[in-house]
Image (tube, one colour):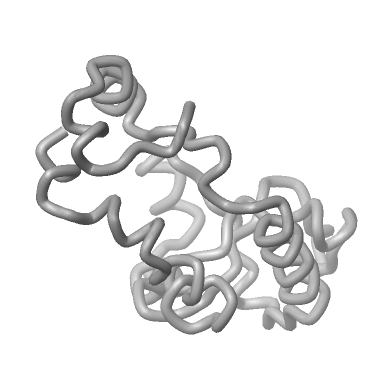
Length: 141
């Protein structure tokens, strides 16, 4: 897809249908290759530097019941809305809580405030080309 202005987003049936059906848009070219490389490099640094205590090595699941069972009453996920926290794939730790796969392959996601506290991600998130997506005419999709 091309980069669309809010005006085009509102009027483009293809984009609107994709967004409504899939819940996301792929906007090829939104970020330059250099911006993408910088974000990937920074994420590699963050991943390499992550130091996650054993009690916070939470395996993330999108299944609600499974997630509750894994976390119990732990609030690591629940209180992550304003923090940068790491969530891991299943099977990446041994029974002692040590990584059995390379760190960069262990993550399910990093949530939830990477865009708020990590300067490079914040700069991209708050750039005009991304912010235009939050304008009222885009929200009507």
